[in-house]
Image 1: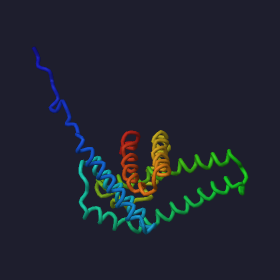
Image 2: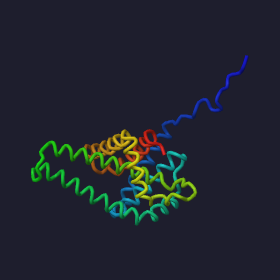
Image 3: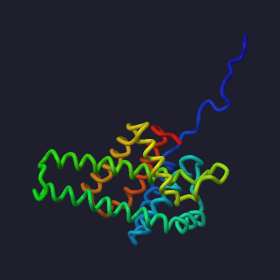
Image 4: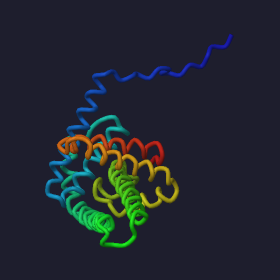
Length: 215
């Protein structure tokens, strides 16, 4: 009788509660450190890029980068991240201000225009979430040195995000849902928990994109 061709590792090792607790603690700490590094406002881009790079390395390669690597990524990404942060601030001010003016009745349109504006804000937030994931993906494993250093390729990440939105709209909707849920949880809980939620939100974005728009 022929012997069955069993796989080499038929049962993958399953994480126990200590591994889950360790991962949750690491993500919470990452969110807190990222929030502190974003205190300079224009440093937020570099901080998010560094955190996204760290999560990508952890989820793909199974380990966290060293503090030296993370510091190098943050330093390299300061100037490009400052430009990205400024663009994001201007966009958020325009969209948020428009929503406030419509809700106050200063700008005509009423409920329909307000709903459309809120939908646009949600989609832009989803795009921003995908950009952060893409900036973490880029540079971690560059093919023949063609990719920019980790945390610096914001324009390339934006172009890749637009292609994902065109080809995989479900990924965009899922990313918008993740960001929206994080915002809702922040509003419903104490704002002091927002830094902890940041780490979990970044991980959720990476997980969603890994399934719906793999690299």
